[in-house]
Length: 496
Image 1: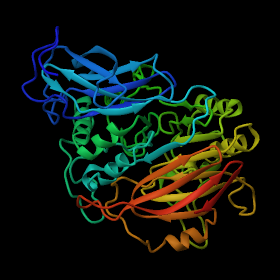
Image 2: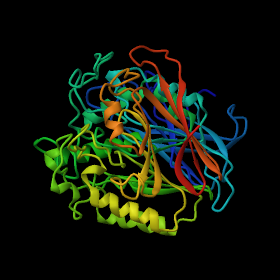
Image 3: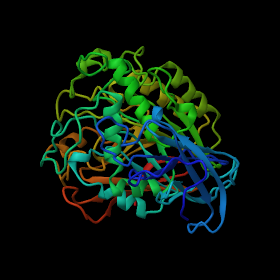
Image 4: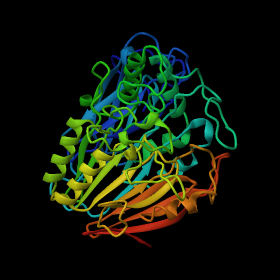
């Protein structure tokens, strides 16, 4: 296909599809297709080298990768106000179907992406193959794990936050040093955030992961600023709410999200439920936007009475009610909670005394106890918590009472390590054995980079912890370091 389309603006002087394509938010009848026009993606003003005028962008959806059988086509107008991003929110598609898509403007055509719709309500879904990722600090390594994730050909990718980082070059240094630099200053303005997203999205391995499958994405802290809590920054700073609004707008512009998630002032509606036939319900949480400030002054390894204050919340009251009501009414075989920070209790001080991470659920014990009680008492079957943030692979059993190892196991928690954050990592850590001895409910812990691969079936979930031996240079192989099975009706973890 060549030649200008009727009504299109004049062709860009260079390829505008430098940041690739993506899809997300699959339902039984639709999906969101995404791209952004950016012939000069690292432009300091954040507009990607685009002029002020609108540009018509054609899209096509086909049932075959060669596009001999185009199912739907149309045009969208990319405008400067949204950094010439394009969100095509499709409905009326067949359930449980694979599709291929691409975009075109002028004489330029985008790469091809693969997507799919979810099975219909109540439909038998067979096997859902899912990959889970988080924490990709561009400076700390190459995104090789994203390339391997794409080659798994998953049905769905769940990204649990820290998709990009806010720091200026060399402000956040990996233990063995950084291997590449961020462009631009620390992200504070809308232009800064747009430029930083564009830099990440020029990475070919990340582009491959986006093009391989539809994504469900939530944020953590670094999409805005380290350890922020609602309207409170980690460190005092002027105009934090303006920074929050800019970060949220850039997040929506650069993710394949639905219109319902568009920013409204300083807010963005991100928590949501996505159903996959009768097999799984995904409850995607936002543990940043509504949380109380961290207790204990936010000091890692601390303990204080504020941790157990039941009036403090990591989700906020409205989201908590939505989640608990959803669990009570769920009829799915598996209920998967996609969220950001470690849920399970983790005493990080070996031996006598106790210390916790107040930025995780350990800083919001009342919230956790209410959710554990709901998981125990509701009709929801087979609850599994999926987590990012830790920069470690981890498998844990959620106990009815964490200080009583003999108490009932209520759910399992599977934590995906980072894509690159903290660099290569290591096979062993000096204090890990001592810490794990005080936390017998944690069944696996490993300090390499990678992602989680899960095969979800009626009878079980098999979770494979995939790792790469290094990210400090390209080309690392991938292997499975550990596998666990969660059986239908049995929340305990079984090492495979």
